[in-house]
Amino acid sequence: MEQPHRRIRALHTASTITVYQAYRPEIGGPAARKGRFPAAWKPDRMTWIKPSFMWMMYRSGWGTKEGQETVLAVEITRDGFDWALRHSCLSSYVRGLHPDRDAWQRDLKRAPARVQWDPERDLHLRPLPHRSLQLGLSGEASTRYADEWIVSISDVTPLAHEIHALVRDRELDSATRLLPQEQPYPASEELLAHLSS
Image 1 (cartoon, rainbow, N blue to C red):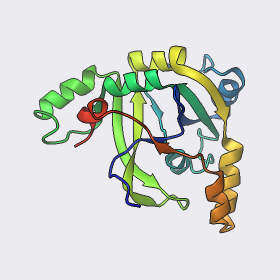
Image 2 (image 1 turned 90 degrees about the vertical axis):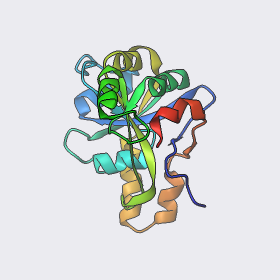
Image 3 (image 1 turned 180 degrees about the vertical axis):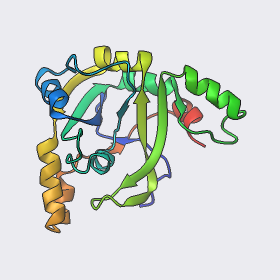
């Protein structure tokens, strides 16, 4: 079935959405054990959250890239996620969506969150024709994420390695069965109007 060009796909419940991040073990390990980020995690830096498990696998090399060896599934409130979408700006200028380039740059400077739409990935990490959302959080959004929105943090590195091993062994059906069951996220048109061209 053909996918919409841009869509948020995620593991979600009535009140939460799961996003993924990858960190070095000194941050990822304590975060998963305590359910919150340790002091070494800096809220003043932009942090990118990804609702797509496969995009996280592409970005982290299945949890093998330096500094991204611990893959975390972070369950956050949908209210928080929606707040970030509402207060975000596209990370690149789109003619027709923004009045002009200067207006976009002003919006980008003010916005505590930014959105990129990147090609979704298959099990071989090849780009697919449709795109998935990445959400960058800074300032107020980053602080709210760490202090208010997090419901739970899980270390899914073993799952990433297990799926990767199945892919290497060409057991793609078995690998697919282990993937998180991501479904279209019910974001309203109003919520995404400023983020879709």
